[in-house]
Length: 389
Image (cartoon, rainbow, N blue to C red; front, side, top):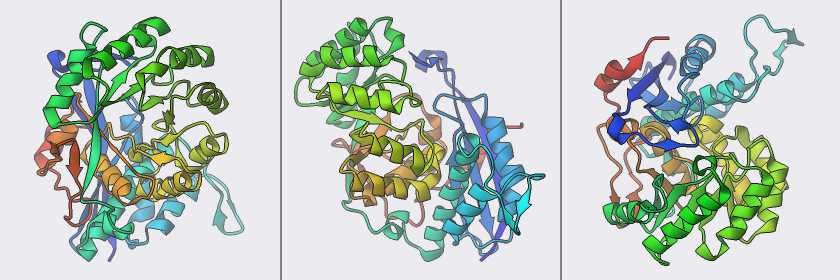
């Protein structure tokens, strides 16, 4: 089997004003992601997804260009089932014009950011092809699913203190969720305001529902420590990205200062970033975004780190359908995986991009047994929302 075509499409989906929300990223007016399509001479088509960053649209054109102009020529004619080798080829092959030593390509510069996100999109599509070629779901290739359904938490929570309880309670009622996540951070103005919203949320949903808070890395170490102390009685499931992802030592300090579990990872690239988090004992839950961190191949390695360091794995799934499906397969098959993120924001890339759906029943998502990722992308969606660079 050989790869005959690699094509990345930037999808830009405007969000109706009445469905937009305001968070630490400002007003979110669109959902943007890069959808990767890989075709083979055996008739198998693989779908993947790459993101420039959470909430980011500006770099999507550049991300698509890396896949189409830099990685596609390396992949054409290759066997798509050689996933580990192709991952390394993309990771280690420099751009045109870089030096070559002893007949081998020197590692490319900038092995984070868009380069890794581009690899992620390709990698997810290759796993999709491998599963389809063997007529088995990806989770089977990763060692088998540990259950037919996985628990999910409803991810949203932007309302003020007066309405946050009702908003989150509405999530619970919508899909029978047993856990929810809300946003905190600089969007609230002060740490005290964030803490007040969390306390109002806990009062609104009661003690039996898991509650997580996400600060998007917007606080200083001192602010994050103060927030953790203020909400200790709220029994948080976790406190996500308390400080900048660049300050892993600071995150470890926050973790040591409180009994509130810490989670992080949506802004990290490759197993090397997650190894540092683990070595510093900076988090209790690792949250790689498969469309950013390096795809399924790298997520499996990150999952091994989670298991080795006795922490948990909960992929960041604020994404389109290909990355959501990939995270579902990884979490369902990994010994450290325990829960899925389920976006309650306006997300056509999850619900309208594909023919299938991921319904939530009694707070759980079924782990599909369809071949590959188990998704069928609607070409009409790509035609409608695809943007030229």
